Amino acid sequence: MGDILKNKRGARSRFAAAVMIVLSALTALLFASCASSDGVDGYTVISPVVSPGDALDADDFIMVSEFSDKRYTAETEDDLDTSVPGVFEAVITVSDGHGEKRDHVCVYMVRSYLRDSVRLEAGEMLTVERFINTDIPSHGRYEYAFADETTAETSFALGTYQIGVLVNGELHMASLIVEDTTPPQASPVTVHITNPNISPRPSDFVADVRDATNVTFTFKEEYDFNTKDDVPVVIVMTDEGGNVTEIESRATCEVDTTPPQISGVHDITVVVGGTVSYKDGITVTDDSGETPTLQVDNSRVNLSVVGTYEITYTARDSSMNETIVRANVIVVEKPKVSEEEMMQLAQQIYDTEIETEPDMTAWDIAKAIYDWTHNNIKYVNETVDKNDPVGAAYDGLKSRKGDCFTYMAVSRVLLQLADIECRQIERLKYDDEANHYWLLVDIGDGWYHFDSCLHFTGMAWDSFMRTDAELEAYCKEHGIEYYYRFDKSKYPARGTESYYE
Image (cartoon, rainbow, N blue to C red):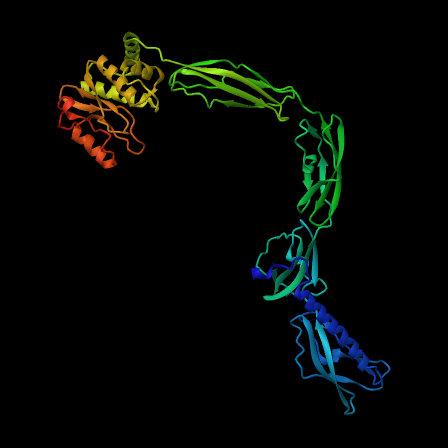
């Protein structure tokens, strides 16, 4: 039944038109009945109007004059059904008691359970009770609901609708006219204008808009906001029903021509491969009290190559006033660290962060070093001097980040402090392949692979004390046969018996 609820876009519905036609016909019939029954015989034929379910018989169609000297009775063979609202026809036979009879074609009307139409203000909630014709006694017969069986309150947009209502299980129709007769309401807002290039919108001058329909906003006339004087404005608010409200407000105009100030800009020196926080220590202020935007152009900087590069700071306020300050980023060579400095840092970490006990085996100590390096060094894809394992180990221990070469260098120095024999091993790479570094470690049972570097996401694996066969199986499983490829002739023979089996 939901299809019955159709918006007729303001036009009179076919049902309403049909009702008008029926009422016109009924009026014509009533006049015709009265014209054909002038009362000369002592009675007048009438057209009764009853409520649904009321009793109706033939005598209800005649009205006998109190001055008549005859007794008239009426009868009909038609079924005078009053259960359904509408206009109906019946043949009434009137007898005068002396054998003379006359037939009359009459009409009677059964009132509708519903009003012909209901007007609803936009924003009001519609309930089915609005449609019930209260002039009709209920006789306990009302059982009504919206035609789509929605008993909850329902709201509608502006327009004309056909609404179906169920009465005692039967569908009846009525027109719903949703209209907006209430003007919109709002509160004025003063707009502060500092940039003549940005024109305010009419809606900027009002707040707390209250209306049941959509509201449009326009200026009552053109206004010039490129001034330092206050500008009174009138905002015209129009809702969907055509109701209009005018709101008086004003604009305070004070054009801002002062650019913002940038403080704290200075040349920045950074080690090659390092990182820079360009906005650290930089502040921006503006005399308007607002917080201007700050943009940094560092597109010319290459932190991987030694050199001097220009950066640009640009501050801009809402009035488009702009300040530009330039500085330099100076990328310098990383200073060489001595092996003694590196070993001191490694010994400090070994003594304070790697948990060892006197009764621990070489396996246990090597595993503790593997776990610490694996868990404490963050993998970053940055340039590391592969010819400087001392510097790589120092940087890794100091900054706790680096690539696979860093993991290898850190692991090696910590293993050396534990008197565990180890040596560097690297991938046999072909053109366009990246290199990879790890260790061979001997804890007394032969050489085994030791790689504390993080693996690919989803390919996590404990690459501690592994055989050649175990490396090859891991690579084959993940389709990365190149990953642990190496020239076996360059390294001592590896153990073949798995620690894990």
